Length: 168
Image (tube, rainbow, N blue to C red; front, top):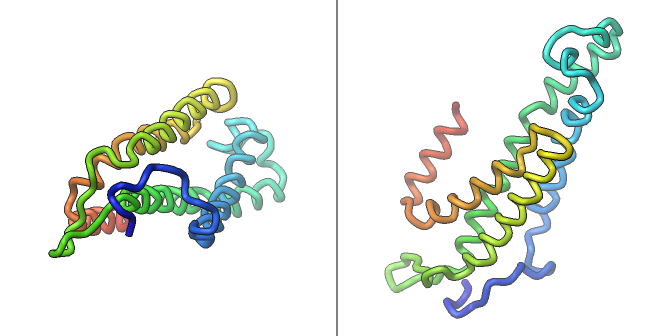
């Protein structure tokens, strides 16, 4: 555990969880497949049967993308984002004699909010210039509020709430 006096800074490469970084890259590649589909085909072909749907190869590509990629990797990426929020919030915690965690007020928050603000600006630029369906802005807005909620909600309530969201 980190001491309360620890300063906020990015985690050094040797201390990062490489498996989480690998999963994050895998999720991004899985999100890329439906995005290529959305960018390459006219919107009428994505939402219904348009001109490109006459070929069997196009139908097969649509079925594979819808079945194997659409939504599944977005869920994985959102799950990894949430786990990143939890790990970041625990980075500055220390436990007392009863095992309860306490954080000094605003420890590490400036770095977190700076990251979220940069993500928000990047997401807004991306949404304005490239694609209206950009998700980065929503992740930034969620990140601005999630750290506050994580520090205040009972862990069992977080677990059951997460399980409820997963099951729906």
